[in-house]
Length: 279
Image (cartoon, rainbow, N blue to C red; front, side, top):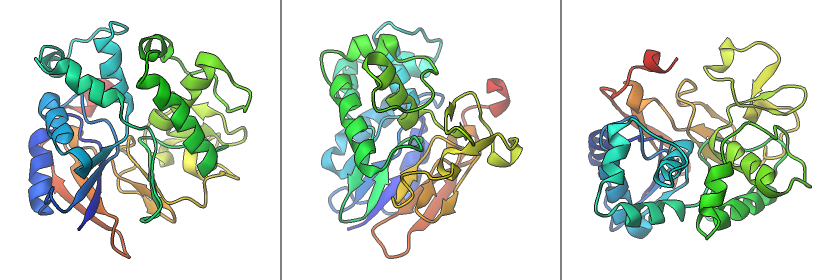
């Protein structure tokens, strides 16, 4: 049995199947962990959703910001010009697929393997227990009757710093932003800096990657995350980035995590989008 963690697919179904052929994935024996953003910007998001859902217990996926955006478009909270997203919305099994999607976690932890997985990162003030608690709060809302109400209140960058007494939509929005959007924080305050993108070396000294903030409470965790294509296969003590920019013409990457030494495997991608179009 092998366990592989895979970075952001974003609708690149052909590249996903090529990667799985490369690693000789056997759904009867192996397990895939997906770091979120199964959909959007590629051209076969519908195929990706159907395939990952069909894997059942052989696949675990956490929700990313693009997955949540798809749910918001479906709920009528946002509009889209994406043919890739419209193909999902027009599919006969759309409701079934999106009910499955909104029941996915935002935080996954495996005691036996010793790894936790999120899409983007963790607020610097969260340790493992608090991250898990916050995840369960958000997941209960997304999978329940309040999902539409949350999607209407999901967008926005505030509040920017965690407080235990945050309540209501402010609390859930912060939780969502931490799990699905975070890259940088203000170095001194630990506040989320959600407008900041690009590689860490391009930022001034006021900002730091979320995982480099002083006194980060999750330093003892072994974390897998995606979302940050310009970071690439960043690998440091307890940190493993999986997003290598497949949709932009980079690579699609899998990390084998059931072995004593985790091993990266990747395939080159043609790319479905030009990064310059999104600057």
